[in-house]
Amino acid sequence: MNGSFLIILLLLALAWFVLVRPQRRRQASQEELFQSLHTGDEIVTAGGLYGRIQSVRDDELDLEIAPGTVVRIARRAVAGKIEPEDEEEPADEPEEEPAEAAIPESES
Image 1 (cartoon, helix red, strand yellow):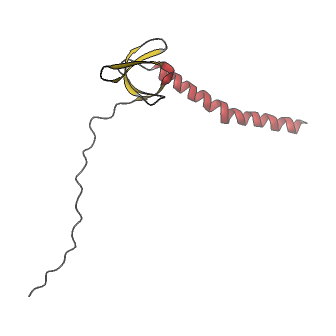
Image 2 (cartoon, helix red, strand yellow):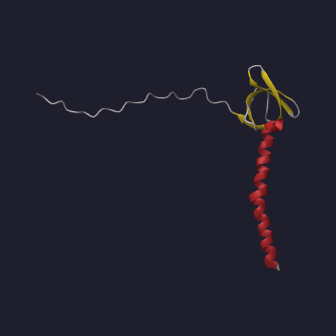
Image 3 (cartoon, one colour):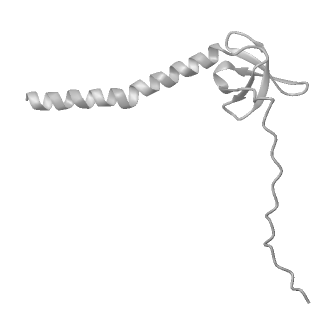
């Protein structure tokens, strides 16, 4: 009886570490994202819309998705924040043309 109780206890502990714990981490990171949203941030919604936040209210955001087009979305619809890319990207170096094989010219 003690052996089977120990196995059940180990299975519950395994389920906790595999299922519950990662879900709580994801939920905490999502909540952190929701709290970090400010006017001017660029975001992507769960539906795939990209835009810039115009105003933030309790559970709603006004999102400009095109110049002059503002939509109201739920804060929970935000899938991610778009981080600004570095302005100073390394310039692409011109591709070098492969050197032609030196073919000796025949002297006549």
